[in-house]
Length: 458
Image (tube, rainbow, N blue to C red; front, side, top):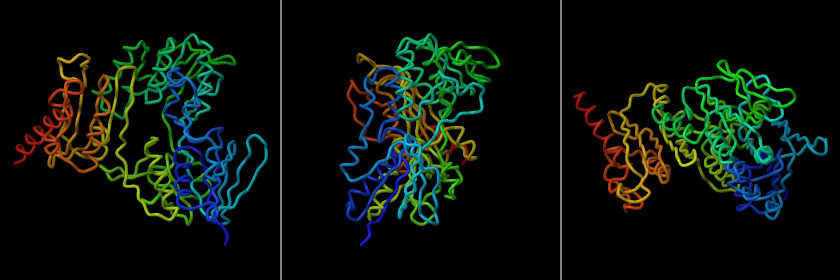
């Protein structure tokens, strides 16, 4: 009996999670697995790249969860430095370029997993490809940036104030490099509300970053190597530039091959991670998911989501049955000692959906106020004005603040109301929280707002 042949395109979180789960359920005598990865590394933590550049993580190898050799021990063949540039859905073949051997190979498949991930946004800015300009997307990017930082640049500019941009800024400041950050929007981290974003902006300035908001980069200047970043307002000298302009789903291969995309611009899949093409599956940053609050298709690029989707995909390929329910976009980050977290919908997203909301934003402390180390935390919650259902939450604070977002994520996941959250039996001891945890205070304040709103509509 002929073996089924599974080809995986993409060797990081989603792709290799799918391959590993499929292998757990189907042995090599039944299922042959071949994975193509255009980079040199597999199964690594892209989230750790800024920390490696900042010398907080000392060895890039610590970011690698599993090497190609370790995958081979599971009878999963991984071909690194192979870029798949075409998928033939009718002939069920992929074409890949061997980037080191300068040759083209074609391989048949019975089952295909597309896990091409996301790619950094690179707008058509003059000079964006100059030497000294770095992205921070794949492990090799982090290795190259670390080499550049180790060489001792005199001044750096970060372009973009999202998660990657802020974490890169922290890394460079940690290495003692004078750093400026340019952001076209009125605030950094535009996926949180402006009042919370202002707290993050203050934290960025507080660590010594020269912050320039509402300034678009017009050009990156240099004479064979980067020398400056120019906006309409100023020219910032720099011999190191890091791009943190966000990411988009890497769907060029899928689109060119006729694999159907969804409303979000990412690959359309059903809850089992199947595309609309027979035998073709997809997972990770290149696929869309359903937002559990709005019900809309979204494209979020988070390692947590990619690993879960890959797992679901592999279980189903392996003969099991599993579904991916959706996402909330829960995420955390930090700028030195300031932690930032969000889940659910922001005010801007609620406006786009035409929804109303009540909100409460409260200031408290991460521990009992009298306990050493108590630090400020601001907690914000958004709720439906009629039902009180939690729609979203954000947190900005010092150590111990950010992971409280998980309580809100669990509440939203289970359709809880702010009224129901008030009496949650959360843990308490002075080293960990006030007797009324900031989560409960915010929920209580929001519940009062909802009750007031209901009273006005009676």
